[in-house]
Image (tube, rainbow, N blue to C red):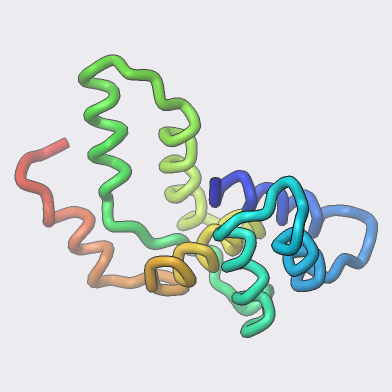
Length: 132
């Protein structure tokens, strides 16, 4: 869901119009079809900080990697989740609005850092009980 919202932000920011993301998300949080907790988090976060100041690097704990690995072993298709995991890696290569949006939502809901975190990066590689 966060990835889909992030891609929507990329579309809005890439438009030919000057759009106020904070106002858009506040409006969506009050009754749009896409309303929900993540939209509310975006509205609150955008009120607290400038979107352009949010680093696009999205940190993670590696848990989704385990899920994708398990799905592959059990031959259970999860293409959206697998693609979202790949988008986490893309966020580490270059700056993108979708990545900034996902980083902002992850920070708001789970306290994930905004930007690169060396400790989490180490844990992501060493906290497994077995190799993926």
